[in-house]
Length: 78
Image (spheres, helix red, strand yellow):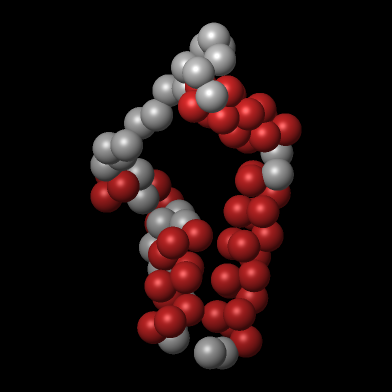
């Protein structure tokens, strides 16, 4: 894995961590847990079918890593 691959994956992991620890995401996780515990709350809305091939605007979803393993991690994080 090259240094460029490492920096790409690290930057994506940093963004992922920021989004995962966002207050809005924490509230959504609590709402999902409350729903599963059969508490009366507004149910979360889940959208499972997203046309990813149509969402690659400005090549934001294009993998840049050269190493195959790093590319797999990058794909998952993007």
